[in-house]
Image 1 (cartoon, rainbow, N blue to C red):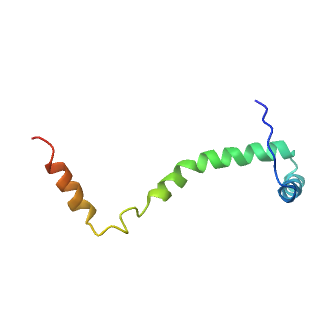
Image 2 (cartoon, rainbow, N blue to C red; image 1 turned 60 degrees about the horizontal axis):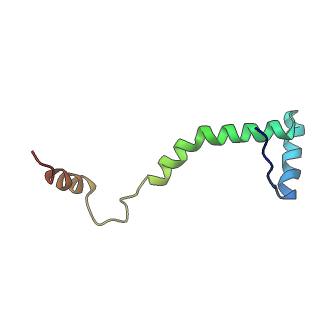
Image 3 (cartoon, one colour; image 1 turned 180 degrees about the horizontal axis):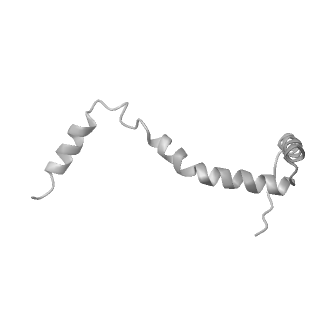
Length: 73
């Protein structure tokens, strides 16, 4: 699929430099960057939720236990 997108000139310059170093086209470099991002995406989402209880004044295990105690036996 073809996609049209706007990239700031300074980033195009950097992409061109990298593509010359890597001996690949700019398009191939962008495809590789997208592949890399998509492979890393699950880790990014995990890290975004890491420490979610840090600001709470609760013990997360006690909270979990209290919620489970609400379930019918």
